[in-house]
Length: 266
Image 1 (spheres, rainbow, N blue to C red):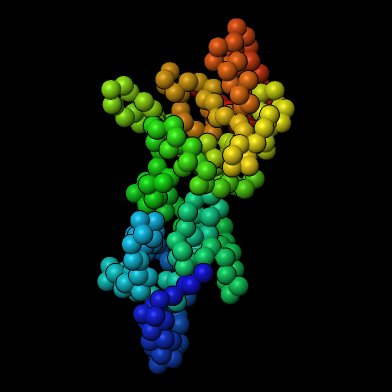
Image 2: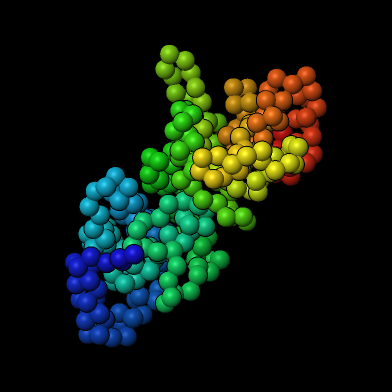
């Protein structure tokens, strides 16, 4: 993965020269703690690059850093490069896409400390609605929802997505609820290939080679249920239909509340 364009390399070289010339004064400036305003400015440029990459446009990191400096981030390109990689680390932890060229891991830097992690996520999280590429936005189209869910990855133990307590509704000739693909991806990943009601392994693998499980909202979205992991379970097709049309649906629903610890009654 290529981290820098030629213009970025040139900028980095200039920064090295500047640091050598200014000596301890600049090095002291580079060591100062990032404040929320600086992180917010740089994160806005980070997501601009991410959107440009996703749309197939030309994304210039050196231009992004120049815009950040003009907006008040008085840091070298090397320092901003490091901070962008740390933003990528927080996105990667949550199964979210990160910008190519700002890898979340690096041999020359340590992982984010709890304090750095909290500082970055506190500032970045409110920006994600605009920052995430459209491929990760909630949608009301079933086929598109499935495609978007498959783009997300959630290793076991990863931070769950926030979801939507009041999912949006898009009106066409009928009203349909917009569902969050990240919630689907997380619930499937943490089911471990087993139905969360009958506890049996998924009956087959789908065309992508994944255990086939369907994500069900315990309290229906049409009844005001939230689109969050606290209201969603992964089920085999039989159990899913059972909860929708079975004579014992209410009793089976109660079993879920007792068996799946993350569920919250709504």
